[in-house]
Length: 106
Image (tube, rainbow, N blue to C red):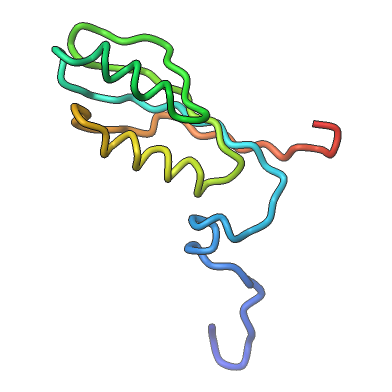
C-alpha cells in the first residue's frame, strides 16, 4: 500500500494456493515425472491411482508424462506434492497449466 490508498486486492497468494477462493474453475496440468527407471512400471501404476491423474506414456529412461485435473490450484499443488513424495520419484516438473471457468451446466 502507498500512503492513504487502500489495496483493492482482498485475497492473497496463500488464499489461492490453499483453495480458499471460491471459484467455478477447472484446472488441468501436464507434468513430467523423472523416476528410477527400474521401477517405472510400478510407479506409473501407483500414480495413476491418485484422483485426477492420467498417464500418457513412460520411457525406459524413467520419464513419465501425466495430466492432472483438479477443481482449484490447491488441488493441483497437493497432487504434485503427493507425486513428488511417492517412492521412486526423483523430480516432478510442471509443463503446462490451464484454468477454465465452468458454467453451471458443466
